[in-house]
Length: 299
Ligand SMILES: [Mn+2]
Image (tube, rainbow, N blue to C red):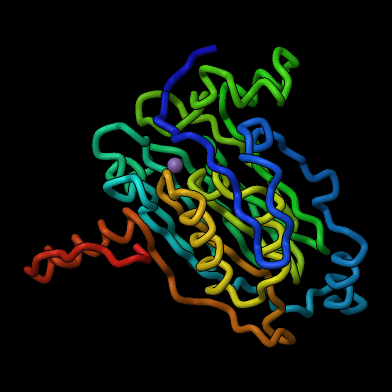
């Protein structure tokens, strides 16, 4: 097994309790982060299937107009000097990339996708998830919260093959090692996962600056309890910062909606955040002959 990259992941931080939520019994361990529940029923729960069936006529022709409504937020965090994460969200593509922490020009790395990448290509209820590295995608469907991606880390593979247990992960000396990444030198081996999506599905794509600091339980609670997408992303980033903000924090939250019946409106505006936004801004500034400014809190 060839180890390609080491990233300077910060120490794990304890997660925070939401108002009305009991405090976590202790810091979230790498073991809990490495615990992946793969969706055995991604083809759709009965409720989700029923929602989809309601949108089809006798011939089976889709009568729904599925679209995405999304929000994006990226923050440098409290300890890093620059934001090495990148995000893009558009009507058919959601993507989070994490530059190589501790490596030179990580912000260039993620902007050029020489890094980890978790991306969802989406159209009318069908999606393909492309994943390499340790950014993550989660799905909230019918109240169930599932981690859809599996971390490409050494410790995850050791847990999978039974060499260590999840309880051993937190203290493992190589728990920061990535086994796969987009490095521009080796052939990329992303996981490609086809997904069916349904109205009501809510996806979270995030860098490890969120999932490494905020517990899965808290992520679930925020996604399940806060309707407004901008508020969701703001809350998630805020929780990671309150947890110490040891790394750059990036998240995309996207709802699958039926544009004909949903009160929410589809989002059509493409959004860049993090290093990608800085790069886009610098490029625009160059074209306009102006000096780029430092990115704001959203990128
Ligand atoms: Mn990171």
